[in-house]
Image 1 (cartoon, helix red, strand yellow):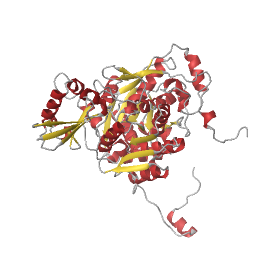
Image 2 (image 1 turned 180 degrees about the vertical axis):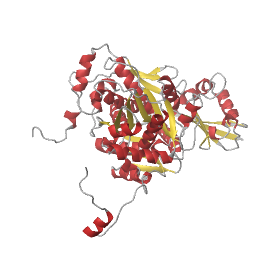
Image 3 (image 1 turned 90 degrees about the horizontal axis):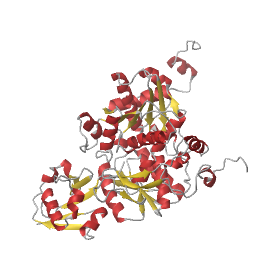
Image 4 (image 1 turned 30 degrees about the vertical axis):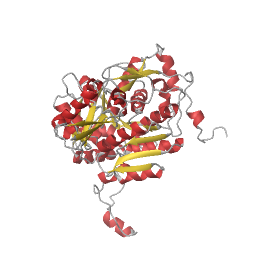
Length: 92
Length: 434
């Protein structure tokens, strides 16, 4: 079971230049991110606070929907789903 | 041709007398969350914590009187405040922006029981909203940084401004908007020659797509994404002008709309910079934010005593404020609390009444966002939040011709034949008014 996580330009230097990372066997958005951090440890401190919650200026989307409209990090994911991480400070 | 009204940008937009050429008043971009600094490039987000970047200045210890004289000798546009803007060269743009009227609204003040009330009339800008200010600064910086295309994610007013300023500068423009925007805003944008891309989704979907696109197209300046720190600085000029137009004094209270919260926070920052530079005396005005009930993530978080806004799906006639996931929401809440103000939300019916009240008492026809501001002002006055001796400024940020649906059906037209008898029959004449 593969989940693709798309990374914004601002994070790619912490992910060996990759613009997307595929992780296996994740049950939720939070699971998928944990597997991303296992692969690229520096991403954890960039995206999450000490308690493991997403920093307040990080937006995470599952198939284009902000996960805060779903179940947050507990939102279940299925094979082939795409997660997108983006900075929240844009627009207005 | 001396004294000719022919427009010459090189004369109008040179820096004011005494301002050094090729001097950047700003020092760096600085993260508002963790204070990491970056060079003054096209970046908008802190790579360490994803916090927003803001332009940082170290103000030279200058005689306020000399600074004031330099401002007063400058052009009647936002560029008179070049000492407070993040540009290297003398700022130039082909579309004069700013120095909009500050209108003393005595009839509206009397209606609301306020002693002294002014309307900052932003409908007088080139594309009839405050967005000309932020686009002017973003475009000027984009040209300094070598960008070749202007773009934005917009709820309509920004689309107008980006399209017009790009046309004046000779740059191609891409404007991404929600598919259901007011027709007036779309038609005006297209008339300037911009490529309009209507996204099947709401503004937050548009914003997400633009954030992705901006990461992949390094020669495009998305004014409110990769150029956002510079763009946002343009809103400070609302405060600079207001203070100067009040005779170098501060208002006691400012009521303004909140969409992303950028303008709201930057207006306060503008007043603070004038205080710090010694140009005005006193303390920061009480800041009151205005939202529509159909999209009020900031007002909701404020009322609940929270610091972070929970995103919402917008549903309101105030489409220019329909941002469900406001980037500067936490800072807007903090500012409202710190200054003793607040953030209120008003219904669509109250918005329509606000548009009407402003038009009937001041002769200023505002779009729905201005209706939100006036309805909030009325609510504050009715609630007794405004002290009897306060001097209040309300920011009317856009033109009513852009949101005609908001007033459709709100009055009747009388149709008759071209006949004096019929006219007299409809409108009885009782002699001259006393």
